[in-house]
Image 1 (cartoon, helix red, strand yellow):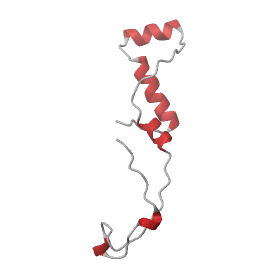
Image 2 (cartoon, rainbow, N blue to C red):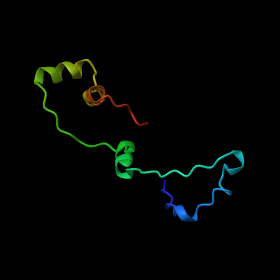
Image 3 (cartoon, one colour):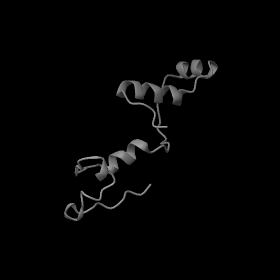
Image 4 (tube, rainbow, N blue to C red):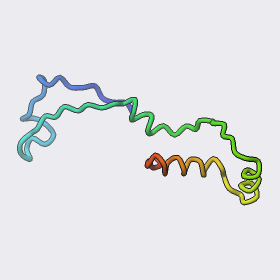
Length: 85
């Protein structure tokens, strides 16, 4: 989604705003970091090489465990973040 262009503060008319009939209009300045936001919502996958002991890989395969999923869940838990989708 494209971010709309900013408005010049001097061109704003508080008497004709969206909520002007509901009471006092407040003009607010909003500062965003669109790069950070886009990184957080990015759902593409990234390939990472992880080294684990052979015996552990054997156990995970025989248990039908998706090692990639477990790693993702562990990282989200350690970082205290949640899935974006």
